[in-house]
Image (tube, rainbow over all chains, first blue to last red; front, side, top):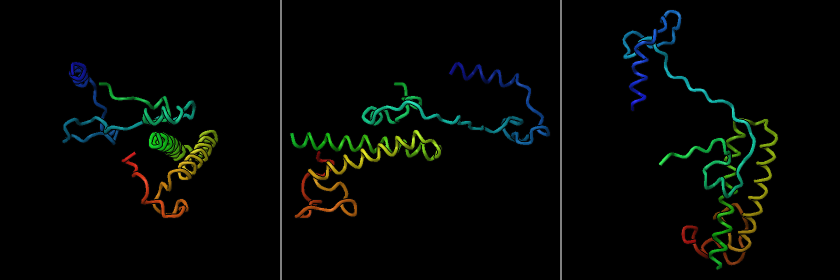
Length: 72
Length: 84
């Protein structure tokens, strides 16, 4: 939560890009005019080491690099 | 003991099925990855063998279309999957 507040402060200092140069930014009437919509980037996966079937089923993936359980 | 063995064989089938479907998803995005394809084909073969071995002892895994039945009709005999 603390970190979020800090980021908000940074946002205010940020100089917004000019809409005519970046036509895909949020319009003036939006709550955050001048900012861009979110974009998702998914780096290509490389086939490397895989877990054996019994471990993979327990972990929910055969790829160790995709294993990211929720923290309790 | 018999139920334990049956559960063990079913678990093996589930594990191999999961590995096959995860490789299936990877190959959807990377259809030219020969190593992954080789792995997928090997797992499919193991899965096929595991299913056949299971069905030899405990009867069909599917109710129709997947494997022939011994006499008498085996589908309704033995425990249901959730009873194992």
